[in-house]
Picture 1 (cartoon, rainbow, N blue to C red):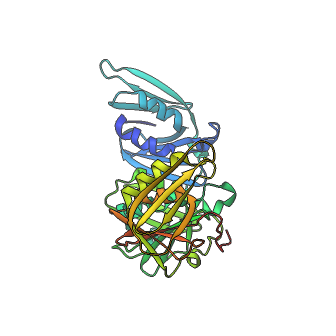
Picture 2 (picture 1 turned 30 degrees about the horizontal axis):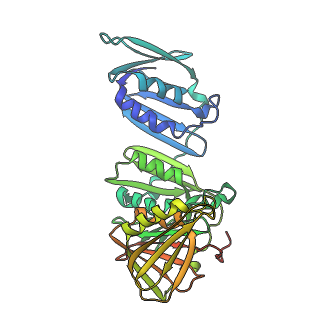
Amino acid sequence: MKFKCSKTSLLKEIEYANNFTTQKSNLSINSNVYLQTENNNLTIKTTDSTMGFVTIIPVTTDEPGSTTVSCATLLSILKTLPNIDLDFLSDTAKLNISSDAANKKFKFSIRTVESNLFPDLLSINYDLLFKLNQKEFFDMYDKTEFAVCTEKNRFFLTGLNLQKKDNKLVMVATDGKRLSYIENIFEHELKDFESAIIPTKFISMLKMIGTGEDIFELGFENKTIFANINNHFIYSSLITGNYPIYEKIIPTEYSSFCKANRDDVMLAINSVSQCVEEKSKRIYIEFDNNAMLISADNNKDSEGRQMVVCEYNGPNMQFAFNYNFLQAPLKVMDGEYFKICFSQSSSIIAVYPEPERNYFNIIMPMQSKWDLKI
């Protein structure tokens, strides 16, 4: 195998590919990147057995062939090389990287493993793919991913639930103490698929490879999610398990509403949070007479209180909850104002942008429980 290509174009693809390799052991074939060149194209493949990556870039092929090398090692070497065209030559045991350019002569060698030992990657029926706008889909991810569970013993909550409802795409995340929900109607027709739990890494890889513009394709088959984005084909196994029936904890009506400036509340929470107990991260919010009192203490040597003007005409109410649960959705919320909705001090708190849009968040106060089998 012998080919020439620019360092810049190859480096970008190897950086992507390295995220799909097995990182725990350099001895595994899944820590290698598969390289195959023919017809002035270079095919690049990696997999960690649960996720897969394939792309093709143009090169100048002198001798067609294929091999595999350590992806991490290739990446490390490429990062140190000048931005010039590089020569690649594979013999029976090594991949040689060199240049004869004036004042930039060098040669590196990486041990190779036979390409026939590299595992076959999955393929998909392209008829199952449907088109989505990158920006709109990534916005759905940004509005929900912070509520994903990080506890490994509840594996089925460590991903995002994606489902089709009528002509809408719905994305939900919950860790059992909070829930984020967003729905969106896309320009192109959605193909039918069963409700799926998607690993967050898969969507973060989509964001990394995508431009945030244009269209990409998504599809499901055999408990696997596939995507075709910017001439890159990637896939991942779905998370197994039954996602909780979250709809039953979403209130259909509220008796009390508070409208407040998003920046004012975020600044107040940031200030008061300096006085919280590190373990519980508990803050208190009291609503009364068009005012929101945010307070905290660590039962040791500090306490903080800050008043925020708001629109509220309901009864005096106080809630205690983890301040991150309110801070996280406010950070990604659009608009100048938001509203907090509730019915009683022990009930669920709902957080909506104001005016309302296609997403909202649910927060459980401390000492409250959801009737969800999670």
